[in-house]
Image 1 (cartoon, helix red, strand yellow):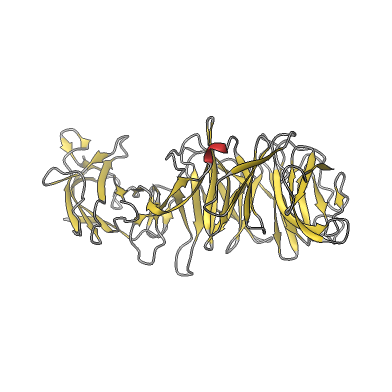
Image 2 (tube, helix red, strand yellow):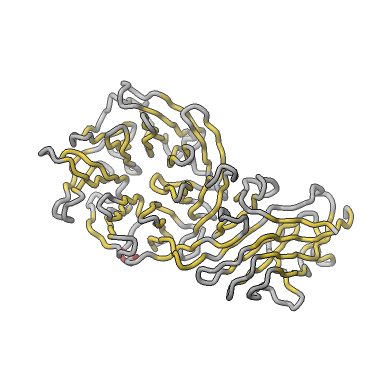
Length: 483
């Protein structure tokens, strides 16, 4: 009797269903793969945030401000805020110019030698601001500055001691004294046709990414130090624009609309990963760091959600994992607008058709978990095999939790449900640690459970904050020839 063993899960989602790093799997969601022990268990779920009913557009940028308030900036001009993790969202302002395409907090001179923090935000052609201590809407300085004009993005970031704003082929600037500069900026002088989309302050440099439009397979990375008369370095990625840049253990760049994730250290450029699905991209505000782990809000895929890519210890592999899906549990045709950490709690904005929402981590409840293993052929894709038994080993099963086991052969369209000897299709016996499932259907109608290739999957059902913890899944089989 031969055995196909699934044990260990830290490898994350593989690029190829047939091969990946050690302990990788084909796909999954809602799974915690980076726990203290190498078992498979459920992650925390996302829940609808308080006051969600006032959210009527897609928040594209969050600003967790230094006054302790979280602000959200929407794609029809709404500005929201909530005070405290358990606070309720409210609308504080509506910008008549429409879509807010960038936002940031920055401290500068208020004109009478007081250096105080402001909230800045941009629409297609205008920059507006308010003192962080100001009263909404009375103290809003609407249309405070004028930009070149870009209907898509005016992403902002503090870098090199100033506030930099993506502005077409230029970078607009607010300096520490409160002076605003836009228009044809001779300090950069990017070639015409480029439109800056995202930026990141990196030590003594600013790194920014540009696009040349929706039909041009060119994304460009640039560096500048505010001292040189123009950009210092540039590097082209043959993808449809640079969408987002995030600094974690390394600088990660999401480029193009087909899920490409890149490493760049301003010298070496490496395509390191691809998000699942044929298409996928991340908005400039759809990235954040959670406990040292980079997170990315994926759009345009049939597997949308909040992904992580990275590692928590040096001995772990760099792994991709779909950590969270929106609270309404849909992954297709969902837009993820922005991510942020606020009070150590992840906040996620999303849009689904005409519905909008803000979700946050639910500390009291685990998510439903789904695990789909790699395609297994035993190194002999030409040999037919007969699969009959699956052994599931867990830690002691908590009360009201359960695990379902599924399988399929030869990449069949439908997963088959495995059942135990008592015909139960769910392992739910409190305190027990193992279950034996039989394979009675699937494969050829006359030879159930037979085929050249085989996959196993699990649905892991938690209860409240308790989750099953799967140690191993072992499928037993015998080769039956070449037919």
